[in-house]
Length: 214
View 1: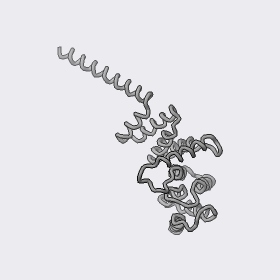
View 2: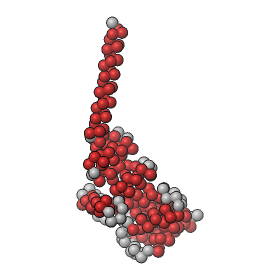
View 3: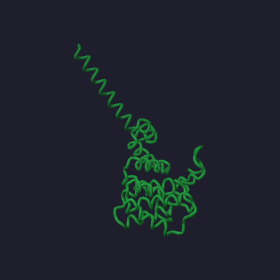
View 4: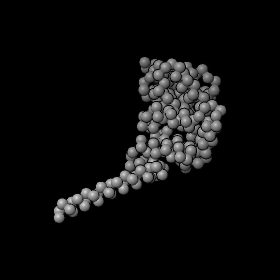
């Protein structure tokens, strides 16, 4: 009798597990956005980012692609983050680049109360991308191209989220005097920036300090 009860219990448990796994698979396939939020709520950020990307593939909603990029960047998955950003950013003059600009503008218009008045979502995303690309830029050409990207995507009046500032902070944090020197030359060599801007002066000072510490 006990064996029968135990066998029945094991069969019931097995069926329950199969149903649970099946339900998990169905929800994962049909509602990746829900799984994204669930995984994020329990600290499974990397998995949450993958569900965000899956939701983007299903809906083509750039919000989810941007979210998957941010999670990959935050978790140090640099190659994956760079791939996601390039998909979001698109080629110059492409429909994707235009869509990227429109998406960023829409995020600025829906900023949460408390965001600083000079907050710029495009600068923020490109700043995160610049920091990611820094870890992947292994050659001199890669590094000069990265400096050009960060400067191009930074407005003349620098703000804390400016890509060139994010890039500088990443290199300074890594104590990379050589890269700081390269970026300093590029920053000084452009006429784009307002040199009376407080953030510009701080940027130059911090880069100079990093170079002199080598």
